[in-house]
Image 1 (tube, rainbow, N blue to C red):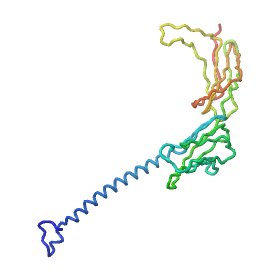
Image 2 (image 1 turned 180 degrees about the vertical axis):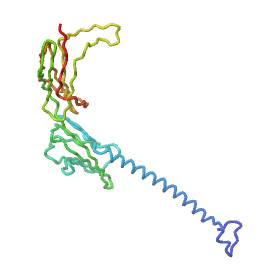
Image 3 (image 1 turned 30 degrees about the horizontal axis):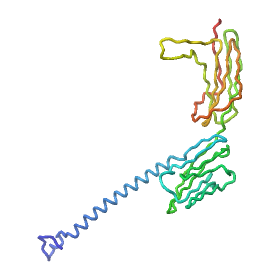
Image 4 (image 1 turned 180 degrees about the horizontal axis):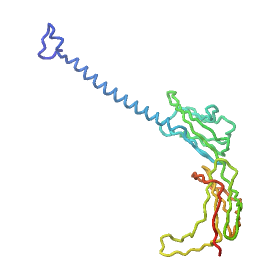
Length: 274
């Protein structure tokens, strides 16, 4: 159908607007807008996946004889057809098929693994040699795999430190000594805590009742790693004698990392004559 006012014949037909053509042009415009919208959506999803991939491996810490949970980031985002866990991308240790059946295939983890429905892998009775990079392979229904790395580091619980004082020089006015602290473990940090001066009962009170002995002071060595901490003390007595506490004590589990202050503390202080 031709538009009104259009003359047939001659060259005038070529310049006549045709409704069918204009309708097709309008349809192409809609399709172009839809295509641009889909392109933007795909680019956004690609950017999100690239950003997620750049985060690198998750890091999990555990203690010897304790439990660690390796949990993929994608565990709750979608349902996967089948999954399996590997160690160092080579040794398969756990799998679940499309019917939900679970296998544990490595004898060194016998009785120590549990694979949860959300794809989290539990490792019990941790050993030092469990420290490694683990991979989880998540396969969807069309066969596409998503791979995620999780780094597990297993630490020993920090034992009671051994503390000792070596007197360099001491008399009735001066005491020069080196305080030593050690636990015989790698990957630990040391913090020396000096004596607390004038402990207050209530910092907001108008008056304070204080009690202290200027001739006796206690220095504490605190040793930590990412899963535990422990401490031991040395007590100074005038003029220059030192007493260390017993080394028999349990470790305290923690998740904090302390700043390294060193395991040797040289002390130089002046003591007033009574």
